[in-house]
Amino acid sequence: MGGRRIQCTRLVIMRTLRWLVSAQNLCASARWLSGIEPCKPQVHLVRMVHSSPIPAPPKANDAPKALTPFEEHFFKQQKDKASFVQVLDVFCGRDVRRRGHVEMIEAALKWMPEFGLERDLEVYNKILDVFPKEVFVPRNLIQTMFNHYPRQQECAIKVLDQMETNGVIPDKNTRFLLMQTFGKLSHPMKKYQRIMYWFPRFKNTNPYPVVAGIEADPVSMSKLCLERMAADKDARITVYQLPSTEQCEDGTVKEHAHLVGIQSTDQMSLLAEHDHNYPVLVEGPFPLWLKKTCVNYYVLRAEPDANKREKTLGPERSLYYPIELDLDLERDLGDDHTFDVDEVDEGPVYAMCMAGDEKLLVKWIQGMQETNPILGEVPVLFRLTSSPHELSVQEQEKESLPPESDEESTQEERLRMER
Image 1 (spheres, rainbow, N blue to C red):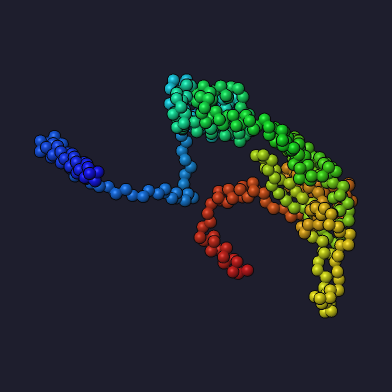
Image 2: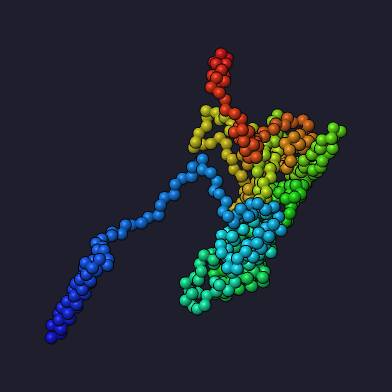
């Protein structure tokens, strides 16, 4: 009985479906005959598999992207804090709903380094104040779970990320603005809580802090860099020349660059034992980054010791019975063998310096002769390379030169062939 009931139910369902389909077709045909609606043939579309397009490689001749309407306001202003804040105030007072606030905030974050405001907490709070208030606050649990207004929340997280990157700690005003804009359970509020949890704990953990504004004083910056590179408490820093300006008789102003050197007592003793038959080398410039500032330093060093070359052994040498045994009998398993700078293959380093101009390196060697008389007896060779800034200038000069004509190139080839 149960099987028959099931079969009957299936038949009833199938007949009902057939009747619905036929009724739908009759309605469509009636509409077509009456001219109310044209007959649309049913076309079955095949869904294709979509894949993300492969980005085309950038072309060398591509022009830079044009500025967005909001970036034009920052581009036209003077690069100071008052002009930056004025642009934000004009945008906030233009429209009550503040349409385009996301694009405005992204443009402001992009132009903050140009104005030198990437570490200004007051400006960051001013940017967060651009969001409309009490619009993006979730009203129930479902809106909170489904990330209410995701684009605006991601934009606020970008502001907090840039604050975190530049080491800016938020304050109570930042918390009030986030609460008023997105609510207590939003993602920007969670990001704020994470920053306030970790930043105070790691604020003073750096054993070598960099004083803010040290880039303006080249002598102090050179001292700090040389002390960190030397890593020796006995190293002595000597300022050979301070940056200054001198007015000549013809009315021109001549600028004198800075010259700062460092040398330890161990380096002085190594330089005193240097072999007079081999010269000492002055190499550089080597780049060194201090936050966002790149400085160059120079090194006084020696070539690898020639006495350490392999000795020629006679024909009586045997692999099973060596003639010489190089055994360190004073070594113990408990000895701590650390890296020794004096035994590297590149040769010992005798001193380092930072100079604003390569012409001052001769003055550096002359000044070191007071504490290192051997420099007056040993030849000094200068192995100087072009810095990245000089290379870029040379490339720009080559591009600015007019192209050579074919006649000039053929004449040069003829002269070379004749030579």
